[in-house]
Length: 463
Image 1 (cartoon, rainbow, N blue to C red):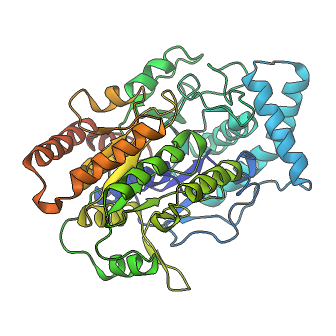
Image 2: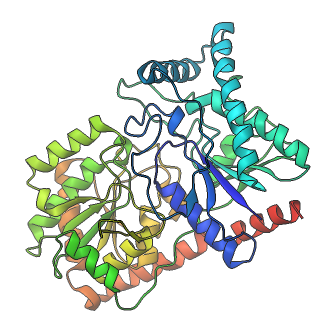
Protein backbone atom coordinates (compact mmCIF):
# COMPACT_ATOMS: atom_id res chain seq x y z
CA UNK A 1 0.00 0.00 0.00
CA UNK A 2 0.99 3.62 -0.42
CA UNK A 3 1.21 5.88 2.64
CA UNK A 4 1.33 9.65 3.00
CA UNK A 5 1.86 11.86 6.03
CA UNK A 6 0.32 15.13 7.19
CA UNK A 7 1.95 16.54 10.32
CA UNK A 8 0.43 19.23 12.51
CA UNK A 9 3.76 20.16 14.08
CA UNK A 10 4.90 22.73 11.50
CA UNK A 11 8.59 21.80 11.59
CA UNK A 12 10.77 20.16 8.91
CA UNK A 13 12.28 17.46 11.15
CA UNK A 14 11.16 16.09 14.49
CA UNK A 15 11.21 13.03 16.68
CA UNK A 16 7.70 12.15 15.52
CA UNK A 17 8.77 12.07 11.89
CA UNK A 18 11.72 9.88 12.88
CA UNK A 19 9.30 7.42 14.52
CA UNK A 20 7.17 7.58 11.38
CA UNK A 21 10.28 6.60 9.40
CA UNK A 22 10.68 3.59 11.70
CA UNK A 23 7.06 2.63 11.01
CA UNK A 24 7.53 2.91 7.24
CA UNK A 25 10.76 0.91 7.41
CA UNK A 26 8.92 -1.83 9.31
CA UNK A 27 6.13 -1.84 6.74
CA UNK A 28 8.64 -2.15 3.92
CA UNK A 29 10.47 -4.98 5.68
CA UNK A 30 7.12 -6.80 5.95
CA UNK A 31 6.33 -6.17 2.29
CA UNK A 32 3.28 -4.06 3.19
CA UNK A 33 4.42 -0.53 2.25
CA UNK A 34 5.79 0.50 -1.13
CA UNK A 35 9.33 1.81 -1.61
CA UNK A 36 8.39 5.17 -3.13
CA UNK A 37 9.10 8.48 -1.33
CA UNK A 38 6.29 9.37 1.07
CA UNK A 39 4.08 12.34 0.08
CA UNK A 40 4.24 14.83 2.95
CA UNK A 41 2.53 17.98 4.19
CA UNK A 42 4.33 19.26 7.30
CA UNK A 43 1.99 22.03 8.38
CA UNK A 44 4.15 25.11 7.86
CA UNK A 45 1.28 27.27 6.63
CA UNK A 46 -0.86 26.98 9.77
CA UNK A 47 1.71 27.12 12.60
CA UNK A 48 2.69 30.78 13.18
CA UNK A 49 4.06 29.75 16.59
CA UNK A 50 6.94 28.25 14.58
CA UNK A 51 8.11 31.59 13.13
CA UNK A 52 11.24 30.13 11.59
CA UNK A 53 9.12 28.02 9.24
CA UNK A 54 5.80 29.91 8.85
CA UNK A 55 4.28 30.01 6.28
CA UNK A 56 6.40 28.21 3.66
CA UNK A 57 8.94 26.10 5.56
CA UNK A 58 12.75 26.30 5.59
CA UNK A 59 14.47 28.03 2.68
CA UNK A 60 16.50 24.92 1.86
CA UNK A 61 14.52 21.67 2.23
CA UNK A 62 16.25 18.78 3.96
CA UNK A 63 17.47 15.83 1.90
CA UNK A 64 17.42 13.09 0.88
CA UNK A 65 13.90 12.45 -0.35
CA UNK A 66 12.45 10.01 2.15
CA UNK A 67 9.58 12.48 2.16
CA UNK A 68 8.49 14.24 -1.02
CA UNK A 69 6.60 17.52 -1.14
CA UNK A 70 3.95 17.49 -3.85
CA UNK A 71 3.59 20.30 -6.41
CA UNK A 72 0.37 21.39 -4.70
CA UNK A 73 0.67 24.48 -2.49
CA UNK A 74 -1.51 25.43 0.47
CA UNK A 75 -3.10 28.88 0.49
CA UNK A 76 -0.40 31.53 0.76
CA UNK A 77 -1.29 34.65 2.75
CA UNK A 78 -0.72 38.02 1.13
CA UNK A 79 -0.01 39.47 4.57
CA UNK A 80 2.06 36.99 6.56
CA UNK A 81 1.92 38.99 9.80
CA UNK A 82 -1.83 39.46 9.52
CA UNK A 83 -2.32 35.76 8.79
CA UNK A 84 -0.21 34.81 11.80
CA UNK A 85 -2.30 37.07 14.02
CA UNK A 86 -5.54 35.52 12.73
CA UNK A 87 -4.34 31.92 13.21
CA UNK A 88 -3.17 32.77 16.73
CA UNK A 89 -6.39 34.57 17.64
CA UNK A 90 -8.49 31.60 16.51
CA UNK A 91 -6.28 29.15 18.42
CA UNK A 92 -6.55 31.22 21.60
CA UNK A 93 -10.33 31.61 21.26
CA UNK A 94 -10.74 27.86 20.83
CA UNK A 95 -8.50 27.19 23.84
CA UNK A 96 -10.58 29.63 25.91
CA UNK A 97 -13.77 27.81 24.96
CA UNK A 98 -15.14 30.91 23.26
CA UNK A 99 -17.84 29.52 20.95
CA UNK A 100 -19.73 32.07 18.90
CA UNK A 101 -21.23 32.52 15.47
CA UNK A 102 -18.46 34.98 14.59
CA UNK A 103 -15.70 32.52 15.54
CA UNK A 104 -17.41 29.71 13.64
CA UNK A 105 -17.60 31.94 10.56
CA UNK A 106 -13.86 32.72 10.79
CA UNK A 107 -13.06 29.01 11.03
CA UNK A 108 -15.33 28.12 8.12
CA UNK A 109 -13.85 30.84 5.93
CA UNK A 110 -10.34 29.47 6.32
CA UNK A 111 -11.55 25.87 6.11
CA UNK A 112 -13.01 26.35 2.66
CA UNK A 113 -9.63 27.15 1.10
CA UNK A 114 -7.89 24.30 2.95
CA UNK A 115 -10.60 21.85 1.94
CA UNK A 116 -9.85 22.67 -1.70
CA UNK A 117 -6.14 22.32 -0.97
CA UNK A 118 -6.46 18.91 0.67
CA UNK A 119 -8.78 17.75 -2.11
CA UNK A 120 -6.01 18.55 -4.62
CA UNK A 121 -3.30 17.14 -2.32
CA UNK A 122 -5.05 13.80 -1.87
CA UNK A 123 -5.69 13.57 -5.59
CA UNK A 124 -2.02 14.23 -6.35
CA UNK A 125 -0.71 11.94 -3.60
CA UNK A 126 -2.90 8.94 -4.48
CA UNK A 127 -2.18 7.34 -1.13
CA UNK A 128 -4.21 4.51 0.33
CA UNK A 129 -3.82 5.83 3.86
CA UNK A 130 -2.65 9.24 5.01
CA UNK A 131 -1.09 9.28 8.48
CA UNK A 132 -2.28 12.46 10.23
CA UNK A 133 0.25 13.13 13.01
CA UNK A 134 -1.05 15.17 15.97
CA UNK A 135 -3.87 16.62 13.87
CA UNK A 136 -6.43 15.99 16.61
CA UNK A 137 -4.92 18.85 18.63
CA UNK A 138 -6.37 22.29 17.96
CA UNK A 139 -3.34 24.11 16.55
CA UNK A 140 -5.55 24.78 13.55
CA UNK A 141 -9.13 23.58 13.88
CA UNK A 142 -9.75 25.13 10.49
CA UNK A 143 -7.26 22.74 8.88
CA UNK A 144 -8.46 19.62 10.68
CA UNK A 145 -12.04 20.46 9.74
CA UNK A 146 -10.95 20.83 6.11
CA UNK A 147 -8.99 17.57 6.20
CA UNK A 148 -12.01 15.66 7.56
CA UNK A 149 -14.21 17.01 4.78
CA UNK A 150 -11.72 16.52 1.94
CA UNK A 151 -10.88 12.98 3.06
CA UNK A 152 -14.56 12.02 3.31
CA UNK A 153 -15.04 13.27 -0.25
CA UNK A 154 -11.87 11.64 -1.64
CA UNK A 155 -12.07 8.25 0.07
CA UNK A 156 -15.84 8.15 -0.27
CA UNK A 157 -15.37 8.12 -4.04
CA UNK A 158 -12.61 5.51 -3.84
CA UNK A 159 -14.54 3.28 -1.48
CA UNK A 160 -11.48 2.27 0.55
CA UNK A 161 -8.52 3.73 2.43
CA UNK A 162 -8.66 6.89 4.52
CA UNK A 163 -6.96 8.71 7.39
CA UNK A 164 -4.99 7.14 10.22
CA UNK A 165 -5.04 9.71 13.01
CA UNK A 166 -1.84 9.07 14.98
CA UNK A 167 -1.71 11.07 18.20
CA UNK A 168 1.30 11.50 20.46
CA UNK A 169 -0.27 14.42 22.36
CA UNK A 170 -3.88 15.22 23.20
CA UNK A 171 -5.78 18.01 24.89
CA UNK A 172 -5.57 17.28 28.59
CA UNK A 173 -2.13 15.68 28.40
CA UNK A 174 -0.42 18.50 26.48
CA UNK A 175 -0.23 21.41 28.92
CA UNK A 176 1.92 23.62 26.67
CA UNK A 177 1.74 27.37 27.28
CA UNK A 178 2.77 30.18 24.96
CA UNK A 179 5.24 32.96 25.77
CA UNK A 180 2.43 34.93 27.41
CA UNK A 181 1.71 32.03 29.76
CA UNK A 182 -1.60 31.10 28.12
CA UNK A 183 -2.50 27.45 27.57
CA UNK A 184 -2.27 26.65 23.85
CA UNK A 185 -4.94 23.94 23.89
CA UNK A 186 -8.30 23.47 25.60
CA UNK A 187 -8.19 20.89 28.37
CA UNK A 188 -10.73 18.80 26.48
CA UNK A 189 -12.34 18.88 23.03
CA UNK A 190 -15.24 21.20 22.40
CA UNK A 191 -17.65 21.54 19.49
CA UNK A 192 -15.04 23.43 17.45
CA UNK A 193 -12.32 20.75 17.71
CA UNK A 194 -12.89 17.83 15.31
CA UNK A 195 -11.96 14.41 16.67
CA UNK A 196 -11.68 11.07 14.85
CA UNK A 197 -15.02 9.44 14.15
CA UNK A 198 -16.34 5.89 14.14
CA UNK A 199 -16.61 5.62 10.37
CA UNK A 200 -14.95 3.52 7.65
CA UNK A 201 -12.46 6.16 6.48
CA UNK A 202 -11.05 6.95 9.94
CA UNK A 203 -8.63 4.87 11.97
CA UNK A 204 -7.16 6.10 15.23
CA UNK A 205 -3.93 5.20 17.05
CA UNK A 206 -2.34 6.65 20.18
CA UNK A 207 1.07 5.94 21.69
CA UNK A 208 0.14 5.16 25.29
CA UNK A 209 -2.59 3.68 27.43
CA UNK A 210 -3.00 6.98 29.28
CA UNK A 211 -3.88 8.73 26.02
CA UNK A 212 -6.36 5.97 25.20
CA UNK A 213 -7.99 6.51 28.59
CA UNK A 214 -8.23 10.25 27.93
CA UNK A 215 -9.99 9.54 24.63
CA UNK A 216 -12.75 7.62 26.43
CA UNK A 217 -14.13 10.99 27.53
CA UNK A 218 -14.08 12.57 24.06
CA UNK A 219 -17.31 13.30 22.16
CA UNK A 220 -16.96 10.38 19.75
CA UNK A 221 -17.79 6.68 19.72
CA UNK A 222 -14.44 5.97 18.03
CA UNK A 223 -11.86 4.33 20.26
CA UNK A 224 -8.12 4.45 19.48
CA UNK A 225 -5.76 1.51 19.34
CA UNK A 226 -2.64 1.76 21.50
CA UNK A 227 0.43 1.32 19.28
CA UNK A 228 3.69 2.01 21.13
CA UNK A 229 6.38 3.93 19.30
CA UNK A 230 8.81 1.85 17.26
CA UNK A 231 12.43 2.31 18.29
CA UNK A 232 15.36 2.34 15.88
CA UNK A 233 17.75 -0.58 15.46
CA UNK A 234 21.27 0.61 16.28
CA UNK A 235 23.98 -1.44 14.50
CA UNK A 236 27.05 -2.52 16.41
CA UNK A 237 30.56 -2.85 15.07
CA UNK A 238 33.16 -0.39 13.84
CA UNK A 239 32.21 3.11 12.82
CA UNK A 240 32.19 3.93 9.12
CA UNK A 241 33.89 6.72 7.23
CA UNK A 242 30.85 9.04 7.34
CA UNK A 243 30.95 8.94 11.15
CA UNK A 244 34.61 9.92 11.29
CA UNK A 245 34.12 12.61 8.66
CA UNK A 246 31.15 14.04 10.58
CA UNK A 247 33.29 14.31 13.72
CA UNK A 248 36.06 16.07 11.83
CA UNK A 249 33.58 18.49 10.28
CA UNK A 250 32.14 19.23 13.72
CA UNK A 251 35.60 19.82 15.19
CA UNK A 252 35.26 16.92 17.64
CA UNK A 253 38.44 15.02 18.46
CA UNK A 254 38.78 11.27 18.86
CA UNK A 255 38.86 11.28 22.65
CA UNK A 256 35.92 13.60 23.37
CA UNK A 257 32.85 11.83 24.85
CA UNK A 258 29.51 12.59 23.16
CA UNK A 259 26.33 13.55 24.98
CA UNK A 260 23.15 13.49 22.87
CA UNK A 261 20.25 15.84 23.62
CA UNK A 262 17.58 14.35 21.28
CA UNK A 263 15.08 17.20 21.39
CA UNK A 264 13.99 20.24 19.47
CA UNK A 265 15.01 23.67 20.78
CA UNK A 266 11.54 24.28 22.16
CA UNK A 267 10.91 25.63 25.64
CA UNK A 268 9.22 22.62 27.27
CA UNK A 269 12.07 20.34 26.14
CA UNK A 270 14.33 21.82 28.81
CA UNK A 271 17.48 22.50 26.80
CA UNK A 272 18.51 25.01 29.46
CA UNK A 273 18.69 22.14 31.98
CA UNK A 274 20.71 20.06 29.53
CA UNK A 275 23.24 22.92 29.40
CA UNK A 276 23.72 22.64 33.15
CA UNK A 277 24.22 18.88 32.79
CA UNK A 278 26.86 19.61 30.15
CA UNK A 279 28.56 22.14 32.44
CA UNK A 280 28.85 19.52 35.17
CA UNK A 281 30.16 16.95 32.70
CA UNK A 282 32.77 19.37 31.37
CA UNK A 283 33.99 20.25 34.86
CA UNK A 284 34.25 16.55 35.79
CA UNK A 285 36.12 15.25 32.75
CA UNK A 286 39.23 16.77 31.19
CA UNK A 287 38.41 15.11 27.86
CA UNK A 288 36.02 18.05 27.20
CA UNK A 289 32.74 16.22 26.42
CA UNK A 290 30.62 17.61 23.60
CA UNK A 291 26.82 17.75 23.56
CA UNK A 292 24.92 17.44 20.28
CA UNK A 293 21.49 19.09 20.46
CA UNK A 294 19.28 17.60 17.75
CA UNK A 295 17.16 20.72 17.24
CA UNK A 296 17.84 24.02 15.57
CA UNK A 297 17.66 27.64 16.66
CA UNK A 298 14.98 28.65 14.14
CA UNK A 299 11.87 27.07 15.64
CA UNK A 300 11.54 29.32 18.71
CA UNK A 301 13.84 32.35 18.29
CA UNK A 302 13.05 33.84 21.72
CA UNK A 303 13.90 30.64 23.57
CA UNK A 304 16.88 30.01 21.29
CA UNK A 305 18.33 33.38 22.26
CA UNK A 306 17.97 32.48 25.95
CA UNK A 307 19.80 29.21 25.30
CA UNK A 308 22.60 30.95 23.40
CA UNK A 309 22.98 33.52 26.19
CA UNK A 310 23.19 30.82 28.87
CA UNK A 311 25.70 28.78 26.85
CA UNK A 312 27.97 31.85 26.61
CA UNK A 313 27.61 32.59 30.31
CA UNK A 314 28.63 29.03 31.20
CA UNK A 315 31.49 29.03 28.70
CA UNK A 316 29.98 26.04 26.89
CA UNK A 317 30.27 27.16 23.29
CA UNK A 318 33.32 24.93 22.56
CA UNK A 319 31.40 21.95 23.98
CA UNK A 320 28.07 22.52 22.23
CA UNK A 321 26.74 21.78 18.73
CA UNK A 322 23.24 22.50 17.45
CA UNK A 323 22.49 20.10 14.59
CA UNK A 324 19.63 22.22 13.20
CA UNK A 325 17.36 19.22 12.87
CA UNK A 326 18.34 15.58 12.48
CA UNK A 327 17.38 14.20 9.04
CA UNK A 328 15.37 11.06 8.50
CA UNK A 329 18.29 9.55 6.56
CA UNK A 330 21.98 10.43 6.81
CA UNK A 331 23.20 12.39 3.81
CA UNK A 332 26.04 14.56 2.55
CA UNK A 333 24.92 18.00 1.39
CA UNK A 334 26.20 19.73 -1.78
CA UNK A 335 28.87 21.50 0.31
CA UNK A 336 30.22 18.11 1.38
CA UNK A 337 29.02 18.22 5.00
CA UNK A 338 27.47 15.15 6.58
CA UNK A 339 24.11 15.32 8.33
CA UNK A 340 23.64 12.17 10.40
CA UNK A 341 20.32 10.62 11.28
CA UNK A 342 19.27 9.45 14.73
CA UNK A 343 20.62 5.92 14.22
CA UNK A 344 24.07 7.14 13.19
CA UNK A 345 24.22 9.60 16.10
CA UNK A 346 23.34 6.82 18.54
CA UNK A 347 26.07 4.66 16.97
CA UNK A 348 28.54 7.48 17.52
CA UNK A 349 27.57 7.98 21.16
CA UNK A 350 27.76 4.25 21.86
CA UNK A 351 31.26 4.14 20.39
CA UNK A 352 32.48 7.31 22.11
CA UNK A 353 31.78 6.89 25.86
CA UNK A 354 28.47 8.61 25.31
CA UNK A 355 25.15 9.17 27.04
CA UNK A 356 21.72 10.68 26.40
CA UNK A 357 20.58 13.83 28.21
CA UNK A 358 16.79 14.17 28.35
CA UNK A 359 15.56 17.00 30.58
CA UNK A 360 11.94 18.15 30.06
CA UNK A 361 11.35 21.13 32.33
CA UNK A 362 7.63 20.48 32.93
CA UNK A 363 6.26 17.29 34.40
CA UNK A 364 3.02 17.12 32.39
CA UNK A 365 3.86 17.70 28.70
CA UNK A 366 5.56 14.43 27.76
CA UNK A 367 3.22 11.53 27.01
CA UNK A 368 6.09 9.04 26.67
CA UNK A 369 9.45 10.81 26.37
CA UNK A 370 11.71 8.70 24.18
CA UNK A 371 15.10 9.94 25.37
CA UNK A 372 15.54 7.08 27.87
CA UNK A 373 14.42 4.53 25.26
CA UNK A 374 16.95 5.78 22.71
CA UNK A 375 19.69 5.48 25.31
CA UNK A 376 18.60 1.92 26.05
CA UNK A 377 18.66 0.71 22.44
CA UNK A 378 22.15 2.19 22.07
CA UNK A 379 23.31 0.59 25.32
CA UNK A 380 24.35 3.89 26.93
CA UNK A 381 23.33 5.72 30.14
CA UNK A 382 20.65 8.39 30.28
CA UNK A 383 20.37 11.51 32.43
CA UNK A 384 16.70 12.44 32.88
CA UNK A 385 14.59 14.85 34.85
CA UNK A 386 11.47 13.45 36.48
CA UNK A 387 8.19 13.73 34.56
CA UNK A 388 4.74 12.27 35.00
CA UNK A 389 4.81 9.84 32.07
CA UNK A 390 8.17 8.28 32.92
CA UNK A 391 7.03 5.47 35.22
CA UNK A 392 3.94 4.55 33.15
CA UNK A 393 6.17 4.37 30.07
CA UNK A 394 9.22 2.60 31.53
CA UNK A 395 8.19 1.05 34.84
CA UNK A 396 9.87 1.17 38.23
CA UNK A 397 13.04 -0.72 37.30
CA UNK A 398 14.36 1.39 34.42
CA UNK A 399 17.70 2.94 35.37
CA UNK A 400 18.47 6.59 34.73
CA UNK A 401 20.74 9.12 36.39
CA UNK A 402 18.26 11.60 37.90
CA UNK A 403 18.67 15.30 37.22
CA UNK A 404 16.84 17.99 39.13
CA UNK A 405 15.74 21.18 37.42
CA UNK A 406 18.03 23.43 39.48
CA UNK A 407 21.50 24.21 38.09
CA UNK A 408 23.11 22.56 41.13
CA UNK A 409 21.21 19.28 40.68
CA UNK A 410 21.65 19.23 36.90
CA UNK A 411 25.40 19.83 37.15
CA UNK A 412 25.67 17.07 39.73
CA UNK A 413 23.99 14.74 37.25
CA UNK A 414 26.52 15.81 34.63
CA UNK A 415 29.38 14.82 36.91
CA UNK A 416 27.70 11.50 37.69
CA UNK A 417 27.15 10.59 34.04
CA UNK A 418 30.81 11.16 33.24
CA UNK A 419 31.71 8.82 36.08
CA UNK A 420 29.32 6.27 34.57
CA UNK A 421 30.89 6.40 31.11
CA UNK A 422 34.52 7.09 31.99
CA UNK A 423 35.47 3.43 32.07
CA UNK A 424 34.30 2.94 28.46
CA UNK A 425 33.88 -0.68 27.39
CA UNK A 426 35.31 -1.84 30.71
CA UNK A 427 32.53 -0.07 32.59
CA UNK A 428 31.90 -1.51 36.08
CA UNK A 429 29.51 -4.45 36.02
CA UNK A 430 26.92 -2.48 38.01
CA UNK A 431 26.33 -0.20 35.04
CA UNK A 432 26.50 -3.04 32.53
CA UNK A 433 23.74 -4.88 34.39
CA UNK A 434 21.63 -1.73 34.57
CA UNK A 435 22.01 -1.08 30.84
CA UNK A 436 21.19 -4.67 29.92
CA UNK A 437 18.05 -4.47 32.04
CA UNK A 438 17.08 -1.21 30.29
CA UNK A 439 17.38 -2.93 26.91
CA UNK A 440 15.11 -5.76 28.03
CA UNK A 441 12.56 -3.28 29.38
CA UNK A 442 12.29 -1.25 26.19
CA UNK A 443 12.10 -4.40 24.06
CA UNK A 444 9.09 -5.44 26.13
CA UNK A 445 7.43 -2.03 26.39
CA UNK A 446 8.01 -0.86 22.80
CA UNK A 447 7.25 -3.96 20.73
CA UNK A 448 6.89 -3.94 16.95
CA UNK A 449 3.89 -6.28 16.96
CA UNK A 450 1.10 -3.70 17.44
CA UNK A 451 2.34 -1.72 14.44
CA UNK A 452 2.83 -4.90 12.39
CA UNK A 453 -0.77 -5.89 13.12
CA UNK A 454 -2.09 -2.40 12.33
CA UNK A 455 -0.18 -2.21 9.04
CA UNK A 456 -1.56 -5.61 8.01
CA UNK A 457 -5.13 -4.49 8.78
CA UNK A 458 -4.66 -1.28 6.81
CA UNK A 459 -3.32 -3.29 3.88
CA UNK A 460 -6.21 -5.74 4.01
CA UNK A 461 -8.68 -2.83 4.10
CA UNK A 462 -7.47 -1.63 0.69
CA UNK A 463 -7.20 -5.08 -0.84
